[in-house]
Length: 156
Image 1 (cartoon, rainbow, N blue to C red):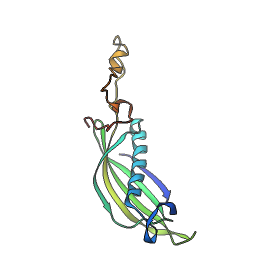
Image 2: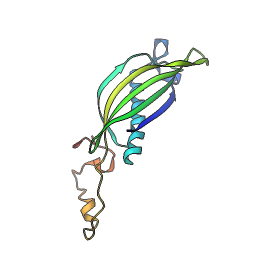
Image 3: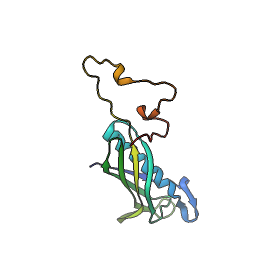
Image 4: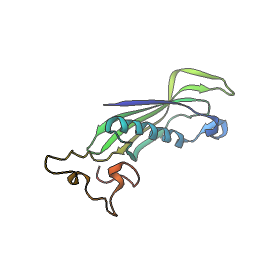
């Protein structure tokens, strides 16, 4: 389908635990970033993260590491996309400013998640006019149509 990869240096400001360990939420935030690019590439919209169905923390991420985050779309629904995520340490900091490129990446975190995107709107048919496409935006209208705010969950 589609695979998107980001790399990020993990600064020492993200260390929360002894041994310069970084909390697991850091990797989940990176998964959100790469999922956003997936949605933009597939649908022209940032989309919204709906859920994780599986998250596994397999190895530590430490300040000074370089992490490679990969998102691969495994299923495309009408409005939902299932994505497999991997965060792997590709460079390991060894204290101070020293670091080494790893011969084999260390898989630190894996997850499966679901994102949702707005429904695609068909262009108006001849003679229907724009009102048939735009619909009503009254007080209870869902924010899903513009890709921002709300839970965005609707029917996926």
